[in-house]
Image (cartoon, rainbow, N blue to C red):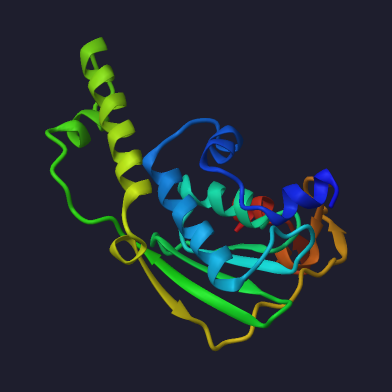
Amino acid sequence: MNQNETRRTRIPTFEETVTFHGHACPGLALGYRVAVAAMNRLCAVRAEDEDLVAIVENDACGVDAVQYVCGCTFGKGNLIFRDYGKHVYTVFNRTTGKGVRIYAEAPETVESGTAVLARKTDRTADEQTAVEEGRKRRIEWLMSLEEPDLLRIDGVCEPPPARARIHAAYRCPVCGERMMETRCRAIGARTLCVPCAQQLG
């Protein structure tokens, strides 16, 4: 097995996921636990193409873990965003036809005011240190929890979403920029891009 194949078939570490995301945070840890659980339940390897597809119901840090661990990205068309504001992630393995829906929720804890400090925009140096230490403790705690204490995992009966399609492009007569046909807006007799339609509508 060559190096690229080894990288694809093993699950990335949390440290590697942190490097991809840019920093360690509880949201990323939560998403990492979700992604690893999905990969294990689906007996999957990281997607090079569209063999895995993920539907995410939030746009928080955890989604980056799903992208990195599962190999699902907007560019490949196998990462679908539904703006529901929920920590729900549905992952399908197109090779086997199986899917899992994972709801993530950490048990309530008392973190001695750290959460309140984290919301302050004018923290002192001591307060910033307290926030960083509290964040580190919470990450370690999230990574140590037993799976049933953090995740609710259900099988999915519905088929996976259709594979990504390449759509035709149209040129907006107002701004002159090309747009995907599925995003066109009709204003009178003209077909406009969304920003121009919003300005003129």
